[in-house]
Image 1 (cartoon, rainbow, N blue to C red):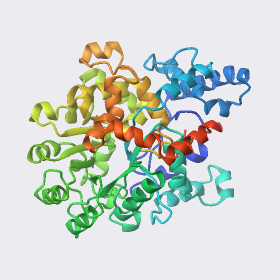
Image 2 (image 1 turned 60 degrees about the vertical axis):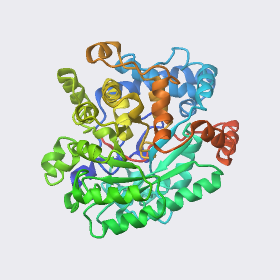
Image 3 (image 1 turned 90 degrees about the horizontal axis):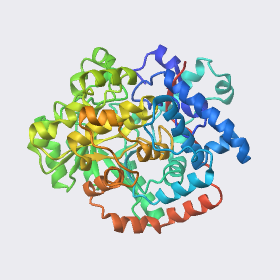
Length: 496
């Protein structure tokens, strides 16, 4: 965690040990890639409204507050609380939060929806990554929570596959997930090696009896021997290649190999991808607050999207999927005020305008962290992002990815998109089209259809396969026994 100051580390709390077990987060939960923002006033109001709803309904149902939060009605209550604090952006009936039968009926009707989450993470048992342990040890040493010291050093067990399996395949409607990673100049600080991702995919699909997992290969243009490393990774038959243009995103202060998507050096990698039959290039952009420009000036030029258009124009055979859709992740209220004033969202609007400005059709926007964070911090900002992406890239070029498991099971994000609608005043002012119903064309495409097209998946065939595999049988037994979602998050939150 070399890029975080001691003061910043002292202000963080491991989310899985400290956050309430609410059906959706009540503050920003960050991975170790960026610093979380403190809980906002509106988020505190949402939390209070959610508790009030639970305390009014749960006793009548003979449930504890925690057990109520594990039900479909508890999830509905979360979105009712958001509506109460931020205005009516989410489709949720008044009776849904207080009538488990109604909530369960709705959830069951949508549970078969085909969802491909092409942006997920876990750490395998043999991982060498120690950043998560070190940061947990650091914050525990600050003495803010005596229970942490008593319990000893924090572990990363919750970030390994057994828990990932529960959060992704049992407690969410996700059908296929792609396992990703993040590189580092320090080999032991990679999330997962390319070999480990390939092994994870093979093991999961063998155990499921169908294709339930896809995988990335990570590239680091400009690093010593990177083309040889890429060639070796491509031999593992990844489904796509991913890179971070800022280089080592974990140790930003010492990152040595930032790169551009449109450089001659990177183009040598594209040639190898095409030769190996890999057409999808996933590139991390954004999650870069305004403070990062001054703090990491050597990386700031590489965080923006001004290298996307030329690469897309020069390589029409490739699909460029921009992770997090380049959102800077500034203070959400500030970002919304800027959008209301200018009609633009830093870097997201730049990305969305590339197809029309440059005449390309191979640029896509992945949602990643930006949907999760804005959904609970400032839903109007979330709606503005969705409207901007759909208007500029097209509804068929916006792709589902959640960055789970850092923010826990992705089910609350799935429910968020199912229920979210762009406010009518925003539609009129900015020319945004409505997102439509939970199972309408726009949301169905974003959840699975667009990724299926990119990754060569025939939806009816895949839907039938995952509906009858071993994971489906395990989930059926789990649900029949009374599903118990953990409602935990696994990143970091800011105290105060």
